[in-house]
Length: 261
Ligand code: ADP
Image 1 (cartoon, rainbow, N blue to C red):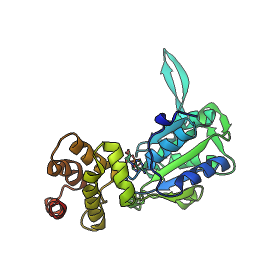
Image 2 (image 1 turned 135 degrees about the horizontal axis):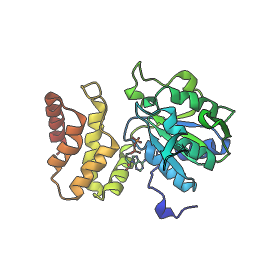
Image 3 (image 1 turned 60 degrees about the horizontal axis):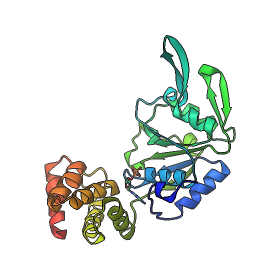
Image 4 (image 1 turned 135 degrees about the vertical axis):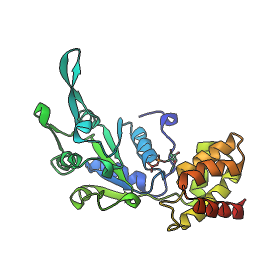
């Protein structure tokens, strides 16, 4: 077990910690759904540290292939040598593997995950003719953002139905004030109006904004303010500009800011 100070700070917003531990105990894979920057990655980092488990995190992207996860032969000093990828290492070591934004990965990744996420719990490595059975300490966690799903990038039901699933959303205002204040060092009294502003922006869905402002952006804003930047400038560079390129929408957001500040 690690020292408490080494455990990344995470403020639970429901029964997610219990569910994570239950999934781990039962050897079941877990899927976390929710908008970007709402705490999914931090949750997994916190749980892994809390449980004293090694964590392999892979940020999936549209070029990520099965070989990136499993491993490949690499040329080393004139010789080819097999090098395990993060998923193989996690299986061999009985660690936690977290695939962030799994829908982004290439299709061949799901072929690898299927036998690993059902009762077989096996990882097939064609290139080395190995078939690894995952030990009880291995756990697969994946996340995706339902808001970004398109017809081309959807998690197939045959994949979804192999995972326990849990929805994440932005924390309630009181929790979000505590989180942003703790992460940025800005006192809660100055964070509260930012969280109120975030609530208004999130309620604007449909107004040419792909997504509401994330907790991550609020932390950026508060960090700038704690470092001495004026509130208008901080909100501009850490909320308004990251959210939209549209001048009209930016003007509407600035109007919203002026109702609070
Ligand atoms: P996601 O993986 O959902 O995109 P992250 O886990 O990276 O988002 O969250 C962004 C930041 O927000 C984190 O680095 C952390 O500082 C903060 N955060 C969000 N939710 C929480 C929470 N419940 N407890 C502690 N920090 C949080």
